Image (cartoon, rainbow, N blue to C red; front, side, top):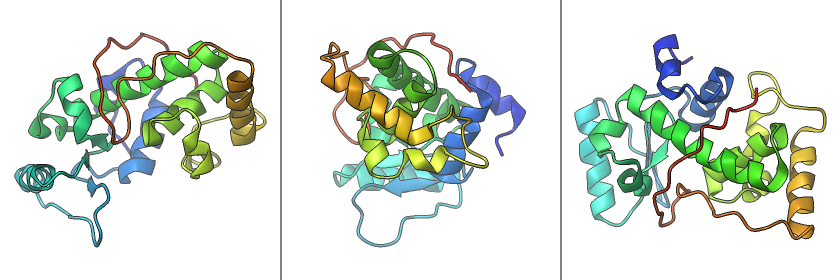
Length: 197
């Protein structure tokens, strides 16, 4: 779905993972906009200029807007250092989504170690800002099965159980990712952790 050249925009994230996120988030549409908490139909811009105008209009009215292939939330733009127009560039969008997912994965690894459960927890945080809420709302399940991110035996249930065990074992609370779904953020450098396929 994503052209090979775009996969090079986030080298620290597996191409399989990048493609899966773009499929789940935007169905591969680089102009996709999702206005969070909007009652009624979502906008469908015809051009980048149209998308920028629409997004700016909703943001000025207090909405947050998910933008582009990876549906990068507008509230993350200051920490990422991008404007709306910049993040609608497909390569920049993939790089931004990769930075967010990498930060989430690093947080998950600190709590549960490397592997598929941590990747699934990172995907949960990509959607909800929480390493566990995306299991409950069904988001992580969208990555399981044909066309999804390859998983270890046990899939979503194993990852959810690992997150629960990490919480009950008194694992130290890691600093949360600076990139969250629809809440305030603070900037920090992302790690260079490799995503697991």
